[in-house]
Length: 121
Image (cartoon, rainbow, N blue to C red; front, side, top):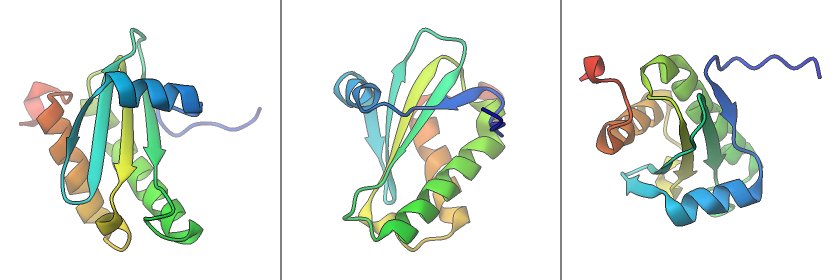
């Protein structure tokens, strides 16, 4: 496959069973726009899963949310600890906010989970 991922240290979490495993065994924190589940995966890389249910909005809204989260993570992935499965779930309020709000919410939850490198604080 000729697709070249723009994330250097991470992969996407794709399989439903992987999402379910993180939901059931991971630790979760939430804020106004996002819920983040984190679980150690015993690998060298992070796997990022993004979920937005139909309650969030139509497919255009959900895809936009997914792109915003993926881009926020991509730009900051160098400060995330490695060896984690991270699932980010949209809340209804995330439907129409901009990049800055999503980025801020993502980093806020990462700090709560203590999964970003200490020099960032």
